[in-house]
Image (cartoon, rainbow, N blue to C red; front, side, top):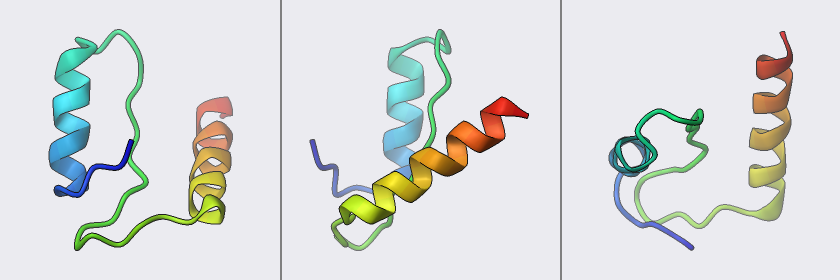
Length: 53
């Protein structure tokens, strides 16, 4: 699903919805710019690397 609001707003909404039961990360951009597959893959790899430390 694509959310076109500010990424921080969406992240906060999701975090509230899962009641901090799981970590929530953001890799979006504001302004309606659609992420590419590479953008998402890079963000996931960065999160995995950070969580593994």
